[in-house]
Length: 258
Image (cartoon, rainbow, N blue to C red; front, side, top):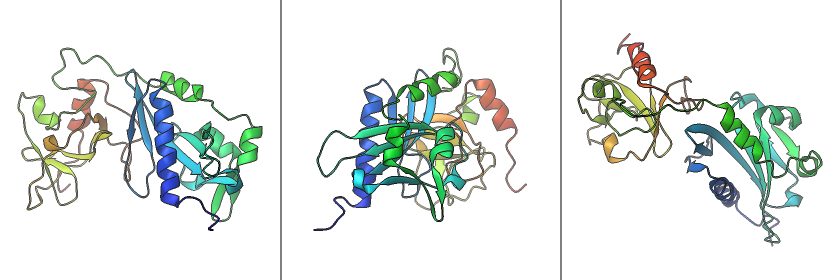
């Protein structure tokens, strides 16, 4: 019999869903992100406050340790939940909650990987410290009321935010770069369905896919957000808090071809 009980993919999926369930029963709205090389596994929200979460899982205690890449850990607001699935005994999973600062402090640098030993995590009393995530949420900015706003500054409706300020409903069409682009203004957005709709800081050039695809057909309660990073997820968890912020961001967008 193979020493491994679970395929790596199953370990990751099971860990993410267990953590999502634990956070949901603590009152957080939870969205799982998708992809093979994700920087963020879960995006959670409570009372208008957003926290990105990275989940790391091991199959059982004999798996020894969790691994991360400290060189890629640049986001201070990212929370970590380390999971021991106990797949060999099917006991209840164990959860160890760390801030980014604690990950940098306790994970040991090693060639090719940075790791935290399971027994050390127990010794450090990191188990079930879910209050760290609640405290992180309390320290983030609260999204303002949407009452009398021209557009929703919390959730996106799939249409062009720029045109909405003029009272127009303009569709966002999928372009050749896999962004959604306004057919009128060239405003571009990176959309992670069910997670975030990120307004990019450069406009498109009207080069659309031959088979039309529109954002309002796939939108699912995404948080309207600004681009704060050059690549990857494009955003570090920040959400627009007012229409004034949205308008200011859009006014500073680099024109197409500039």
